[in-house]
Length: 464
Image (cartoon, rainbow, N blue to C red):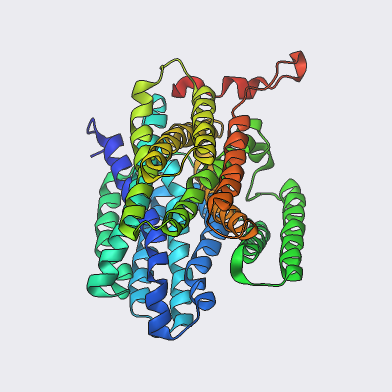
């Protein structure tokens, strides 16, 4: 199989199964909240932990799973991740109570972290370097397709078979994915030096990310007192500072300061967070706006599908349509500017379903150009032996951006008094600001002679 001329793209296809299932599962679960409330006789605040516990666990474990994969082997950790994800999915379907379901979701998230931490690394180490960005575009399109189909598939499954089948459907897909990965994914040829694992660093990183995400979730509608939000933010900041000190002196740091401190990597992670914030924010905002305007749920879902559709099309076509002389940074800048312009038009122009679908398509297209190029720039700036760690950080930034996108929209609608025209404009202004921030991460650094960082200017542009 390794000798086949299409072997790299077989590997990309195997990774895309996990990318598709991860986003499908994330977007499906929110649809089963009413069924869980009825089945377990629980309030919405309790049921929300089915999604929140999953998000907290994935984000907390991504960097650690990536570091483990760089040491033990990316294919090995990826396949075991699918096994854990599949077994935990079956257990979720059999959960007799809400606390057991939340515990099974934590186990499912641990498997998902092992998958997501390795997906980007397996893609860029499977294909030739000059095809890495195109391959990352295919992976991003698979994620977008899962995101788009989640509400439709989830609604059909819940209506026809019940909420337990939302989890059981992962079992046959997981078994196929494990078999495909066993034969199609390449073995890890370059690994990180040493066998040490920075468990203290992982605990501090988990505390920092969990504190931040809990604070964001609490501030966006969980009804917690303000002092609890402030305490969570303080705990997250203290953990982040302790992690920074720890990683500077650790013999085998979880987050290598030399890697994370590089300008391309640091700005790329910020750009990934902003990009996914802009992507997920409208997924919360648009249904609220359209349903408040009297549109039916199927019609609102159809309008909303324009966003992931535009993303998928641009992610697949950008590498063929844009000038080949453009490196990663110009593509990031162009995509982010297009996304910001689309959000700006949506904020000032009429929000009828037809024009809104056009704005969402353009927004998705801009992000479909930005995200693969941004991810490729980050991965090109790190050595191959640390590729899974870097991929884990990219997906961690995605998780934080997702939570922030939901929080920005929820807070904007709350402060503006609901999903009317004023609330929509406030939310879109916040999303537009995030899109501009993403564009700023792609602006080339000024040339200042000796102070200029030539490393970032080179950007390993063989990926073009």
